[in-house]
Length: 119
Image: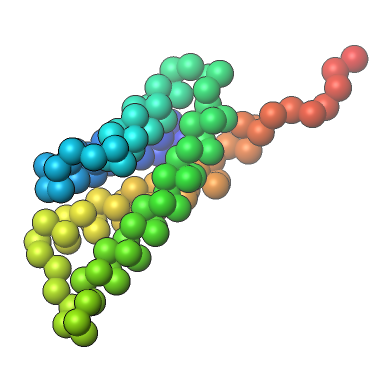
């Protein structure tokens, strides 16, 4: 199941970043999130980066929550709530990204580095 969540998180993150690049223009943050999504997808095939990818997915989920909060605060400027349709799409994709990224807190607990001694 973790494999499915990683694939979904990676694809949603790349899609959200792609739409952000189209809507807001070229900047570093969407490019960082594209690489984050691709890194999480790559962790399905290279187990050595699995632990780091899980931590980055959790961080990406928390940052998506913060992005949603900031977008909603910006929409409420002037006491009149207004969001254009492209921002609604961004909120929807960022919500999926937040849910899938924060689900990383519940991904397989065997990802933690082992501290037991083998004799």
